[in-house]
Length: 514
Image (cartoon, rainbow, N blue to C red):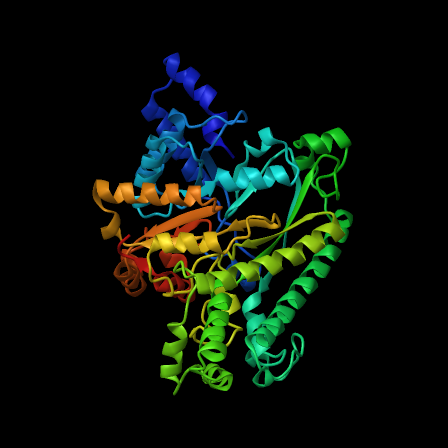
């Protein structure tokens, strides 16, 4: 929770009355970090490990932001947390910094210094997006201003949230593949997985192809929402949380368990995850541009190249990879991204009305974009078969060529700000240490954070590490045991990760200038 807020009165009193010095307080914090980091969450099946690699256990210390009255909330303890994280960069607990339009320059400077340390801390959460959305979904303004970060990029209001349930992860790259193969996927042979939307070679226009994709996409969503409805109805019959419930004001006031549907005054959220956003958008943009508009490729050539995983079709792959791509502030690709987000939210809004629960689209894969890619064959953006999908709202690997500011602008231009069935967009940006060195580099990060805040994007986090360091760590792991990297909404030791996830981090675009 918001440690710099609820501990500050005790810290201030002890400092003023001479019982504690700042250095002693920092030592106490670091003892607590060690205790928290000792906990290891082990999963009982391999799938759980693949979806959440790096021994994630989700504690997120939240600093900064605003008070319940809407004033800036930073204090001396806020800066002590950042200083402690720089000096003592354990993987846990995670550190989340709330940023708003009036965040003090000193706070942004200290955040930038901590980011430059390269351990992935802190992740940034944007008050300008989060407070508005939580308020419009039924949370009182003062409680919305007092939110804490929980998990990867989620936000919680401890006495207003009731259950917050993740729906299934929806692998929309499979919708793309099923459009190419008439409801089937190469991984599963001739088994019908989705809808039979017709032989794509008979589509005469981009509109026909796009409508087929939308049908596959929406079919996946509807199945997911039907499953979640069953889960939500069954949960109160099989689960109870008496200890959590007695700590929740609304549960005590209404004498109801936390798992009860529609506790009076409560706000119920049900998220589902959009997997493969950049992969899907780039593939659709390539087909629209190269096949249906420019006629440089036939759809048969694209499908044949994908079936062959581009072996013997290297020139086709290069053409696909050089088509308009999301992450470059390119209106061609970003307009497709915005429309895909739009009709996804429209379907989520229908489910919200039917179920009476806020159903929101998130782009938070944790590490599931790696195993989900293992069932998806080669895609028309030039991605090889069975490799990782794009993660969160980040660009596809290597597709973002115009710098980190363009990545932010693509996120901005692909959002539907007039719709509310949305939640977090996890955004990873990797920078070379060279481009952020010195005071000039610190100022660059501050300016990037200010831009991100102004654009009202939900989340931002950084890896400050060069490719060669990561390659060396793969080859000589014993020499890099303390190397921390940012994965999803948490950091982990690089050498604890699977080879596939290591490659995913290595292959992210490393921006060397901005």
